[in-house]
Image: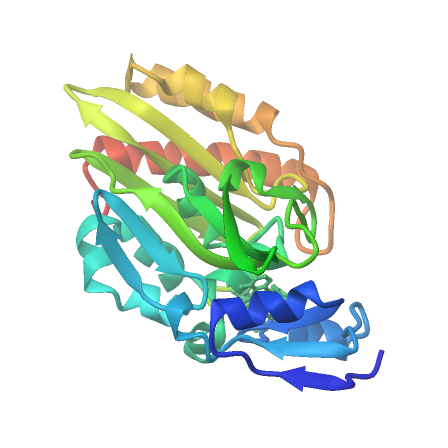
Length: 291
Ligand SMILES: Cc1cc2nc3c(=O)[nH]c(=O)nc-3n(C[C@H](O)[C@H](O)[C@H](O)COP(=O)(O)OP(=O)(O)OC[C@H]3O[C@@H](n4cnc5c(N)ncnc54)[C@H](O)[C@@H]3O)c2cc1C
């Protein structure tokens, strides 16, 4: 469809009122939307809403033990955040594997989540952190919000639980507990500008060689990014030795449901999931992680 109206709200209230009044396309950094509309795989609605001027949707802050990252925060801002580097470096590690500097300067966190690619990179560390998406809408003359756990947010490739009229305003998660350690790994045939063939996050708290609060998230191996809960159960509360790492590798290879596509075969993705969990757990074991 041809764009008939272009709106640039400067507040969340302004944006959700516009969304409430009819079908519209939201654009943030445009790094997914532009190639998709250009290639004809997606059409603009008659109204285009550019949300870039909504200052209240920017920034990284922590208060009362909760982190809040505005939806318009760019991948570069995450990469350069001293706060995140000190306390949640796994987010910085994922940002460091993301695209190129030019794309990172434009790409927003909300855009990465709302695009709902099974290979969205920023989703993987956020799943480890039990993050929640804040969704705002307009109802009875007011901005109303609801929080959705990221683990429940994605319903399929390009699909989420977001309803018509909703705007993803922020991501929130609890400040990680002392001793929390996390690793992010991503593969693709090229070192940069690569869509993940497999991406993985592994986290937990190591104490006396035992892994507690074990968490495993994985991308590009199923219709949505996911938490590998069977693998987490294998790891939870057990001594992280060679035998346990092998059991985790077998479990994660079984737990994923990849497809063959132009980037890799399902067999290769299953194999890589096993390789990555061995690597990630070895890093946690050796204390070789950012946290
Ligand atoms: C060359 C290139 C390399 C890339 N490399 C990577 C990579 O390494 N890893 C990776 O994960 N991705 C990569 N991407 C994909 C893309 O850059 C990211 O998904 C990015 O985070 C999207 O953010 P954006 O702000 O540009 O979103 P946009 O393109 O503006 O929007 C994406 C979608 O989200 C919707 N949307 C945006 N913001 C909101 C909001 N606040 N509320 C509701 N809906 C919203 C839009 O309507 C649209 O449907 C790459 C893209 C390109 C072109």
